[in-house]
Length: 96
Image (cartoon, rainbow, N blue to C red; front, side, top):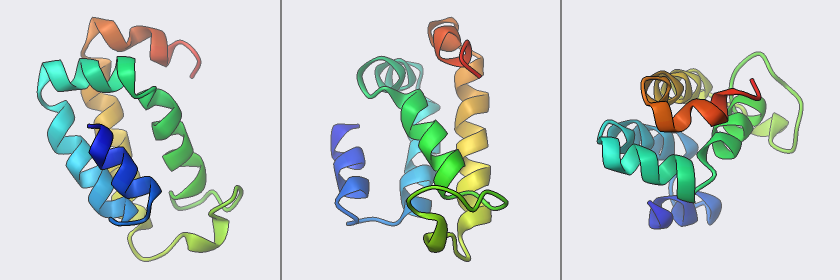
């Protein structure tokens, strides 16, 4: 999981590829829990929603919203939906 985040931060993979991989990884319960606990996953997901998804033109990456913004939004919401099933992630949802 760490390497995925590092690749995204270092712009070695696109945001669309990052969120697609994230959807695949969080389908495994143990990896979902690791993402929520170790990666501060909710902060990353909130950043994706604020800066990369359509309809929200504020933030650092406002000019970078492009053709894949809809896919990033879909993937981000899917990750949140998967995480909402797990008891260990409820604290992350408390702020939203």
